[in-house]
Amino acid sequence: MLSAIGLLLTVVYVIALTLVISFSSLTPVTSCAELGLFLAGVFSPPVFLWLYLVNLQQQKQLRQINRVIDLLISERCCAEMINTSGTPAAPDLNE
Figure (cartoon, rainbow, N blue to C red):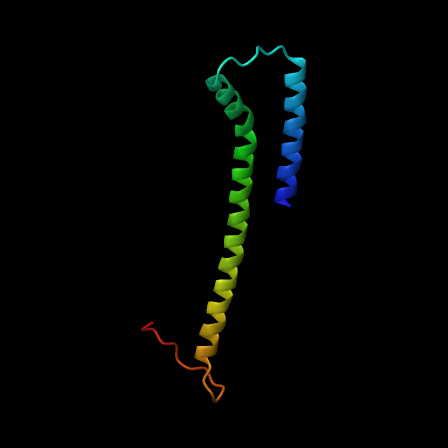
């Protein structure tokens, strides 16, 4: 879902950028430094957008992993509290 949003916003940005550049009167680039500054300014918004979307995706995955770990810990604790006869055992507070 996030990648589709990022792709859509990137395509919209490229189309808007193409329209702005085609209808504006830009002076030609005379040095490599000017070209580098222009390209850095043009590509920085999509880069930060994708960086933000990747961060959101990683947060979502970490939340899912934490839920699974919590579930496994709770299952293990419940299994340790029930002994073989089926009666609950006293919890071990030394752990």
